[in-house]
Length: 373
Image 1 (cartoon, rainbow, N blue to C red):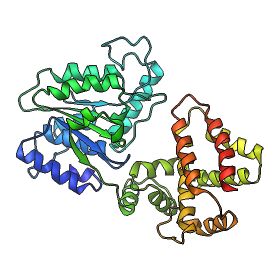
Image 2: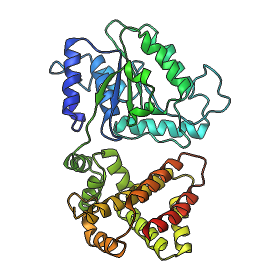
Image 3: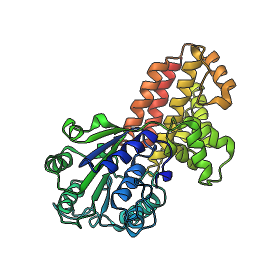
Image 4: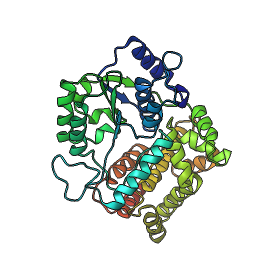
């Protein structure tokens, strides 16, 4: 039911209207920030298109067999496609899941179960940087299979920007000649990374960031058990993304922020040993997300410094430690914030490349020192 979705009233209204009119496009592109409900809305829409007991004329019932199977990712009418690690002995046309190692397959199932329990969950698999060409080929093979006259097959391609050109070309053939009673939904936070030919053949729908209040209320309603002060801080730092707020809470939001500040102090005091120790702790091979959050916190810190520098203390992300922000700005009034933020963004890009993670922070430290002088 639509009550499962937080915010996105305009999107829901549009999809309700499409359903009532009976003119469902063959392909959608849901675009917007990560963690604001694009996948969740896609799943809800898939349920509605196949619900056998539609409520209020435009709402899935959540209790019929089709609704329950789609929600649990166990329906032949719904297929979830995401980036996967490279498989062993992967051959053209083979099932990409069958070629995964045992450990990767078990982790995939675990992530899929989490996604079924919480449609806002971001599926995260080690070394899963691309949507496999065989995943799209399998979509092509299944989409043309006949289905019952009153059902609609829905294929959700999550984080579609992770398709390489070969996969995108394979998908394009389907978008050019779409079969009846099938819908492909692509979700992305990086629409500029998709080929224009893909974008142009989809009905584009923009999703808005959630409000701080919506993020906070969703976390509290889910009974996550975090302190109210931490939830408020995570909601502020989420910039409208429920998933980001939850991830920040789960990794220890106050602890990682203190690590960022300790890293900056070590950098400014030429405490090389202390800086390297923090870099090693934050840059372990299996915790790329932790490093990404570390850089995110540092980015938010310097954006707050920029606001204070220009006498604008409204809407600070680190609102609870404004005195420390003011002190930092006073001690380093000539900081080149623009170039610092640029270096942080470049460091974030390196995380997905073949670079030793601790070295990203070590090299960043030397660059920051130059711009903070």
